[in-house]
Length: 208
Image (cartoon, rainbow, N blue to C red; front, top):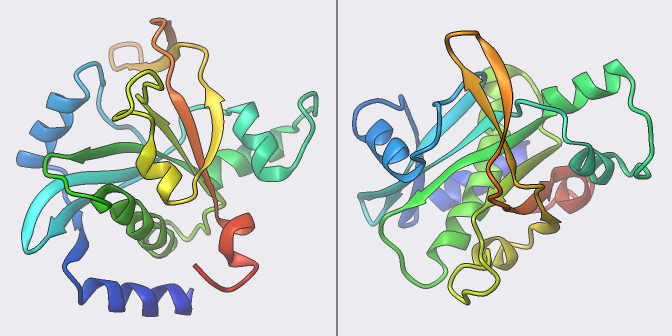
């Protein structure tokens, strides 16, 4: 943790910075404009303004996962596909794994997106612990990558050494505010799954 804080202090002195946002006004407009089918954000979360060369160029955030995702859990905890998780193990996953639910850049240049991801995964580990007293195990990001389009293949995740886990089944979880329930919606839109595993990547090796 101390190493990460030192790193972030050094990174913040440069031209790229992430500032915690209250997620109001302009940031909410950016979010709903980009994620038109979203019902909003529910649960624990931290939203950042992406500041580059003293100007806001986007937003990025992490939010607690809404459901237990077996494929990701098997990777994080090194279990076989047919492993039967206990309620306690599922709760552990739901508590220490988050989703990168927002990543919106409206200005870009070469390597900027991967630099933002690199800074994000370091900063949110520190900030999440300070806010919620939980040491994160990993992050899931579902990207609208299109392997047929060379400009949309999740290159920023690949450049930052995230793990590619394949595609989703073409369904999404939607929160119905009227009934206060989570519903599974099959829309046929498959997303690319990328993971960041803190333990496997650098926590054990004391480096980023």
